[in-house]
Image (spheres, rainbow, N blue to C red):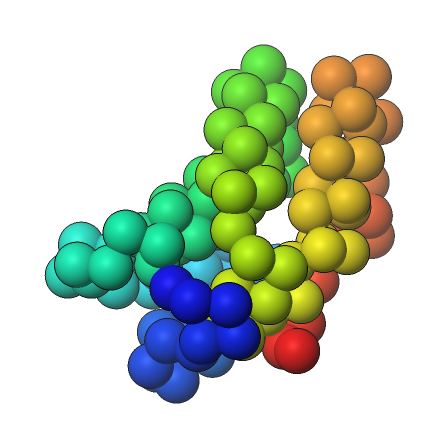
Length: 122
C-alpha cells in the first residue's frame, strides 16, 4: 500500500475501531478477512503486522500468555517497521514506538491495559 494510501473504509475503520475499544480478537478477524483477499503486497504486510499485534495484545490481556504475546507483538512490529509511517491512512510512527514499549513491558510482566496504544488516522 503506497504511502498515504488508505484501504477500503469498511476494513480499515472497523478494525481500527475494534482495536481501539480493546476488542483485539475482533480487530484481528476484520483485518484477516481483508488480508485473505488482498493482492497488494504492501497492504498484506501492513495487515499482517496489525493482525499479529492485535493477537499479541489478546494473548497478553485475555489469555495471559506472555511468551506468545511478546513473540506476536515483535513479529507484527517487524512487519509494521517495513511500512510507510502513514500506510493505510494510519499514524504508524507513534504506534510502532508504543508496540516496541509493549514488547519490553510484556517481557517484564508489567504491561497494563491502559498502556495498550490506540491506532489513529493520519
